[in-house]
Image 1: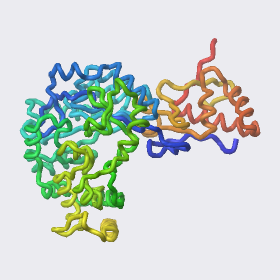
Image 2: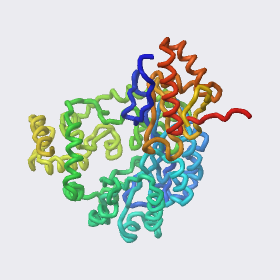
Image 3: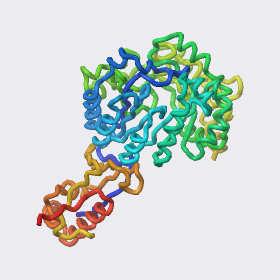
Image 4: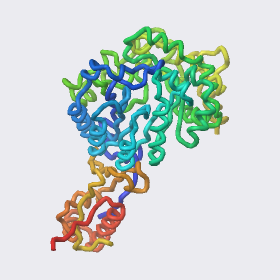
Length: 386
Length: 102
């Protein structure tokens, strides 16, 4: 033996893959589109009691088979999301199945259905990932004006408390909404040392209701106000921006898929294999009842990822824009807003520009895709933030 | 209790071990394994050879003997290595000593 045997602690990014990284590193499972909230801004919330939606959902055995496939392909993490995944009566069964396959579980939930029994389970058999909980307001009035469900605020806070009492790690996510825009200080005070962040709104990823999309558009905060709220804690905001800034040196490209999705996949509630949670363009999905995850990864995905844009507006703007890491523009956002993969989304473009202006990367009237001295600007920003 | 040459170990039910792209990953199933709950354990090539032999039937002495044939190293080096790793694995509750039949 050349050296003493050793046992070492690691994590997903710290594993020294000697041969190659696994074909699949993580998978998202959207267990249901149903939700016990009816949030005014939400892109995916079929009614809780929607029997038709429930009937269409994959059954327990089908989810277990997909979990097995994911583990066999090397996945280390599964994200259970929805809708509200805890509405599934078989949630505990699926959770335990995933953990026994050696998968870490990332749970997205509104926490309303966290019971003492479920919290005890998470304490005894930990998910190994922080549970991500979305907050829709800091008072019953603001929360329930968003969730449109009486009593939902107290259930949400009770669920969070049950987890915290057992020292189960959570991340609290806030939403930028008219009803919550004045609650940022309260949100920061409540979350305290818990990891937390806030997010802008997306349209419905199923493109199934222009009426709801129009409502979501009306609820979107102006980019300038959103950035002002996000930068309420300037040190944290600038630190995050600096991290993004370091990843921001992007060369111009006409490729449509430039996101950091990596070797990940998503399954929707009805068994469709998707590139990511939000992208449901029919040209980008396969049915898991007819195709394996491996087939999607090896036979289908490479061609999808190599797609190049012929959209003149995309080529003039996004393909040349050095703010791509700041910007949420991606095929999924484009699909949600416009029904195609490569149309610039004005709202996310404006947010990226507003952030860049806040950081001093752009002057008021400048458009990022016309800037040629961006390497120097990024370096100056990095110097300022260090 | 430190392992002896007669001790027989098996993997604990409290962890899941997986080989992914040739790497051995030992993932806690229950709370309290490892230094932090979200840690994954791994091992070098020698460690993998030892881990795969911890089947609840082979004693440390048998494992040492088998590794002598695999690695062609000095017996005292292999012995120290195997007993050292078994001690570490047992201390972290990744393996369980099998009771000898009475």
